[in-house]
Amino acid sequence: MRDASPAKTYALHIGVIALLFALNFVLPDYHQGLFARIMALAVFAMGYNLLFGYVGLLSLGHAMFFSAGLYGAGLTVYHLGWGVPEAFLAGVICGALLALVVGLLALRTSGVAFMIVTMMFAQVFYLLILYFAAWTGGDQGLVIQQASRVFSIGGASFDLTDPIVRYMSALSLFAIVLLVTLAVVRSRFGRVLVAIRENEERTKMLGYDTVANKLAAVVASGAICAASGAAYALLFGYVGSNFASIQYSILPLLWVLLGGAATTLGPLIGTLFMYYVTDITSGFTSAYLLIVGVALILLVLFAPKGIMGSIRQRWLGWLP
Amino acid sequence: MTPLLTTKGLSRQFGGLRAVDGVDFALMPGEIRAVIGPNGAGKTTFVSLLSGRIRPSSGAVVFDGVDITAMPAYQRVRLGVAYTFQITSVFANLTVFDNVALPVQRTLTDGRTKGQVRTGVMAALERTGLADRAGTLAAHLSYGHQRLLEVAMGLALKPRLLILDEPTQGLADSEIDNFITLVRGIARDATVLLIEHNMPVVMGLADRITVFNSGRILAEGTPGEIRANTQVQDAYLGATHG
Image (cartoon, rainbow over all chains, first blue to last red):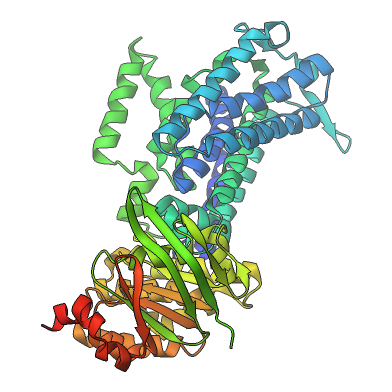
């Protein structure tokens, strides 16, 4: 968005992807698994960031888009025996359609009302999952067997339970979504989204249909979050209602705030940071959430723009 | 010649207050029209009805033969009705470049202009003398330059009708002279409707003047006619000059 050389920006993002690729060969088994999970969830955070960071719409219901992807992929594999690529696509489509419907209704509101309306829709979605326990497995969830998580493209067979395949699949999705969000925020559409965040009334008076643009952003955000959920179901073989609970609506908000709202790399950094703080502290004490809370308070006090946001503000003004 | 814009019986009430009360108004293509009147006369409400920021209680607005009374503001902008705000409302956290890129890319998307975003932005910035500040955040501009940026954004929309709401408010005298030259330049391609309190600006710039009082048109005519009008002198000019 700023007057930066695009070459530098793209080099940085491709460098991050290359670094994550290299880490696959260096990381110990446990951390390799953790990183695969973090990359899949960072996609969730990136989808959330598109709406919250760039358009300035704070949703408290994004768990429903994540779990629409999770169940869209998980149930089609479990009940219909669909293959991995088809199931993934089904998950993304479920999320996009849900986002379209929720967006049409929720965008009649703004601010606090938007937060409440999205939260209510997410609660309805969560309760529906519990209600239809015969198909969804209710709060027990469903385990997707290893045999259902093998697929082949062009003769080559991939087993998503294999750690390297899993890592590389998560990385591929992460890389695609990272580059797509980068392209979107640098595009004309991205410029309009930021303008809506900054001053919606003025944006209208420049000839923009702000409601249509916001709806497009909700659908894009929902589809990306659903892609994360679908990948999560297929990579880790479990579909459960806790992913649709309010906790999973608040987590992406925290990840994005930590990493830096309206920065392209912030969601990854935030997810990584929070995951490792939780992981390390839970090794020492059962009160690890207390430490996570303190870390969050410190960040809000001393770096309210998040990690990447502060770096951009102080040193690297060209960061997208 | 047919008018570019006409209103018939245009009214807007806020509760019991008739802010704009049955206004019949016509604007010819290519003219510079000033709207003057005491505070609370309904000038800003009137132009807000034209730009679509608020809806009329009754009456009609016709732009270039099309009834736009029920049309949302953003569609009017696409037809060529641009509005610059009385209170400066540039995008403070965006660069000057991005501020102007928004209206430029709008006209490119609509197919009303062709070319690159950058070319269009730099043309509008050069016309307003802001070209060397393209990379500055709008918030870091002086007040006068923010007013100019506001005009640059209006210009970049390639409007057929540019509505300026008190554009010289808060400008220094030296800036006002440049501003008058700028508006004259704009009027070569577009019709200009401006609300203005600064009488030298009005008298020096306007082809015709419409005087509002209590939501109605009190008088309309050339600057000379308005200056000679005793009713206007009582309602407005007398107060400022006396």
